[in-house]
View 1 (tube, rainbow, N blue to C red):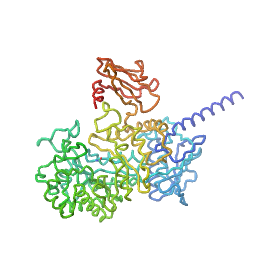
View 2 (spheres, helix red, strand yellow):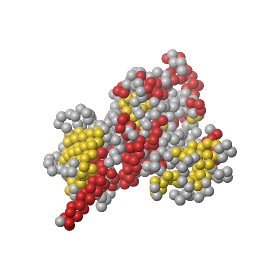
View 3 (cartoon, rainbow, N blue to C red):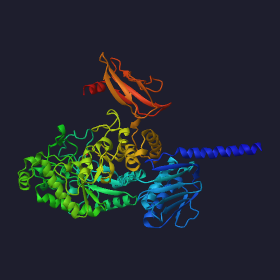
Length: 635
Ligand code: ACM
């Protein structure tokens, strides 16, 4: 009897610990609409049967799940349309559940099996993503892992997105990412229920999409000189430096990428950035410029070509298309014709940002256009250009979208606006009745540094994770129906490889994903950052790079009455300890612990610090020069 109760006790404890372990894994990003946890756990059997219909879209989901489960567990995973004893059932609702919409799902994890139901296959796909996040992190391993307790906590989850537009923009012009790298990026995106990849395909540094009727765009326009250092300050290339850095996507590559996205319920939106940022196109076809000597220009390699002083943009070489020449519109008609055929997505983004107008102002041809059309300002000249481009885009059966500068001289009749200089452009456009996508620098610019300047590759500003998490796509007083959604943008002036693109994207991409998927009232920073930490474990399994910058404190310097530098350290997440030194040695947890503003001794040259959680170092070693803190006081 004693032995029996001991045995029962052991069973209870081990079952309890399985369930306990399983519920520890509940760290879903983006947070679902409703989660009810139940007692017990689902244990993945040795032989897994997925029940799913054979309709093409549903098969995409079942094969995706089959591949994930097989890859990580090494177990037998079969898919069958009639598996009454199936372990995981993927079911399309016979009667539409209006609450779920097109992308929502209902996931029930029971002790005996898993049921995912949805109105459409996209919903099943997102249900699968949530289910995978309930399994141990090793599910993200690209090779089979043994000795894993493959359990998921029992739960009942109902979920659907807040917005239909959930995007990331990848700048493939400043750095060319290969087709396979773009696929990897898509794989990472869809796990967090993003459904749109915006590809910034053209800029001063390279034209990346093959246009068969305009071959020089890619034979000439796709290559520059590889440089490293501070982008924008690179030395101008000499004639003997090889122009072999870059590349482009053939039309076959684009079709493959579009299909790859479609198979994962993700659209690709192309961006052709005109009339500014067009140096690569002008180098290929100098007749597109209103400036004499454009035939001597070269694709930019990161040298200084624009000034942004006091908000006025001045180009040092004319990187704009000539708005007064019919050749420009004939060129754009050819480009848009081919782009519209390549990308099935309903919108084509035609850029419109940061268009310098100083060369236009000097052009007799532009002056004549202004007279003829009654255009009074350069903004109105750009507006004339945008309205003509809008007509071209619409003539190919697509909707026209542009950055918020397209509002300035008067918005075209149906133009959709992507608001990047804060949210004001989006507010203005929506108040005029136009569709809007929010991607403000304030919250959603993934090229910005994630912690202090001394720790990150230098870009214009810092945007910390907790600030990104405050992203709210619908401003007060705006008709929410006109806000299609939101996206984050990864510009790649300072990104030279996919690892760095990943580092810049995650974890801020989690914050944006949650802002565009989850109900507004479910967002909660104190609940979010522990989930981020759990997701780090998943990214580690898949060997995806991410930034640990949320463990770096920020620095608030001031001056004491006797002119010593005093610094306050502010942690982004709670319950971390900071240990520091002023004596140039590397601190650990046996060094002084920060418990309030510290004063640098008179002759100290640097403050070094490291962040711990308990006994574990969790942050990076940071070295902050005292001179740098002094410099900041003067600003
Ligand atoms: C932009 O960031 N120039 C749209």
